[in-house]
Length: 234
Image (cartoon, rainbow, N blue to C red; front, side):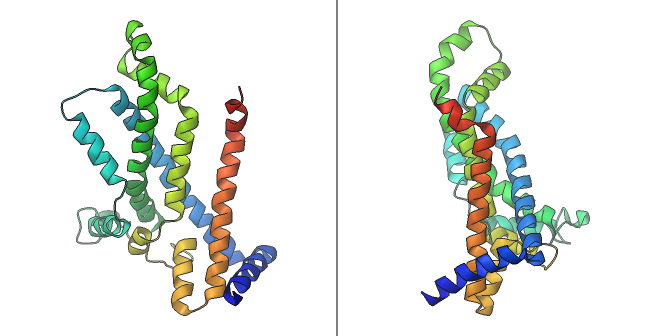
């Protein structure tokens, strides 16, 4: 209980003092997570929509594989990206290891299947409703995908926010490929792990509270800006 109260106090102290190190770490956390989610959404949303409107021989296998990829172990993803970006790896010439870019790549691999799978599940229901109409209008597959993506935008926002929650709380993969380097790749999750290792539980708990507040604030802001609550009452 004492550690909990000390953690709450430490969180408010850091926020009140506008600690420069905390601001830097928080902004880097948001930068990495937002970048990863934007890229993942750009890949996952169209793929999920395509999977919803397409019919091919191994479709069920593809859906099962996509759902399985939602549970990718982050440390395995981190290891694979590390081997690819290391000096002896095929992409070592790019010199991306232990950089925010490497962290973004790892998060994209983790988050994209989540967004794609949730998109497919949401748009599959819409496709059942609109199938006859869109077929009768002789629409192309791309037009069908666009129609489903637009009409299902509220559900897709939820899928994207789910991906963001997964990204901002990630530690295993980004610890491996980022290295938790101060002023370069240290984010809130890796900073928490560092403080726990040092035995500074109040500071670790304070950083954890700030991480939760950031995630909640971002989710609320996106919901307000997109006016999903207002649209839901129409």
